[in-house]
Length: 189
Image 1 (tube, one colour):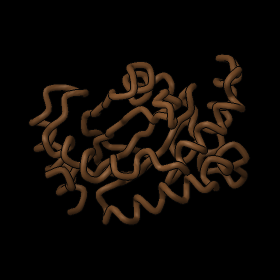
Image 2 (image 1 turned 45 degrees about the vertical axis):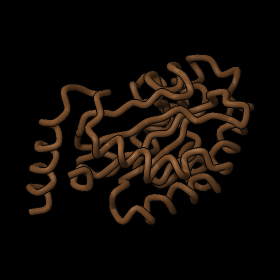
Image 3 (image 1 turned 120 degrees about the vertical axis):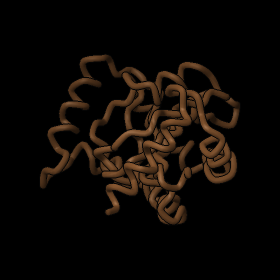
Image 4 (image 1 turned 90 degrees about the vertical axis):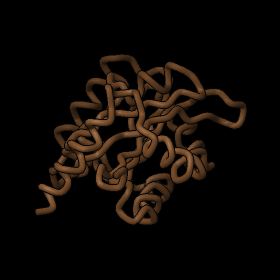
């Protein structure tokens, strides 16, 4: 029954979207009222800045190796690549945002300047987001960019969701990373 309700809501909402990147009013309103008030919290910005200091010289081969290690660890008992991303103050902060949303937020994660996960509310299916629109249409575009995805079934959160992605900036206004928030499709109705 829940699957049918979610599918019906997803189809109804999708009908109102011409294509990815074109938000409906509910997505725009949710971004402004529920995400932006905490989106640039110091715990998130500090975590991205710290990781950027470590990963600034990573090349494509290193990023690919880390992404492959992450993917191999999803669902495994030992998760040395995943654990540092899930067990830090920024991830605790993101999990608190998910809990406070009352089911509206299905997942949230932040990325560094390469599109590598820095912190996440839960395990994502991959470590490197740099090859996806959620990163390419925000980080590379500029400080005021916003990317709204189409509604899709997300394997990580096991729900129909739309993703709202924005660049994250440091105190000077320079873009240092990005954030993606998965929003339950039912909540956008």
